[in-house]
Image (cartoon, rainbow, N blue to C red; front, side, top):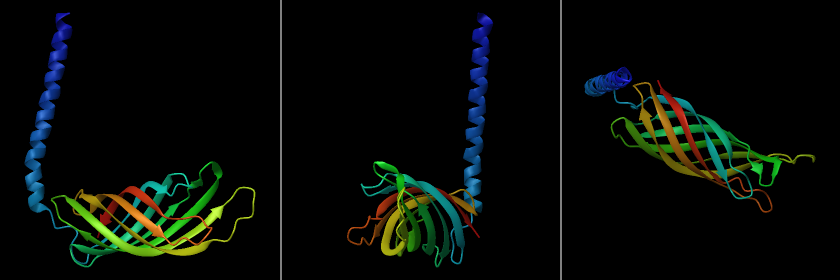
Length: 196
C-alpha cells in the first residue's frame, strides 16, 4: 500500500516538473520569437487559404456545412482586397431530399488591426450568388445569378511569418426575386491561411 502511494506521488511530481519546465521554456521562447517576428501581413503580401464552417440560411432552409477558398492581396499592412469562392447546399426544412445549392463569388475590402499575434479584421464587399433548386422527383428549374452584399469580421492568429488560423462571421444579403427562395444567410467559418 505504501509503495502505491509513493508511486503516485513520484508520478505526480514528474508531471509537475515536466509542466513547469515546459512553461518556463515557452516563457523564455516567447520574447525571443517576438523579437525575430517579421511584420505579417505587410504591403504587397499575398495570402491564400481555405475555410470550413456552418451556413445559417433563412428559416425555410436547414443549417448546413459550407466551405470556401480565398485569395487576398495586401495593399498596405492594414488594408487588403479579398476574392472568395464558397459552396453550400442547404436542405429545404422538412424535405431533406430537396436542396438549394449556392455558389458564391465574393469580392471584399478588408481592414485589420495589429494586436500582437492576433489580427482582428472587418470586411465589406459585394458578389455574385449562383443559386439553383434541386427538388427530388421533379425537373430542376434552371439556375440563376443574383447580386448581393456581404459584411462581417473575425480574427486571424499568426502561427509564424507564413501562416495563420482564421475565424470569421459573415452575413450575406442577397437579392430576392418575388416567389423565389432567399439565399441570404450567415456563415461562421474557421480556416487556415498562408502568406507569400
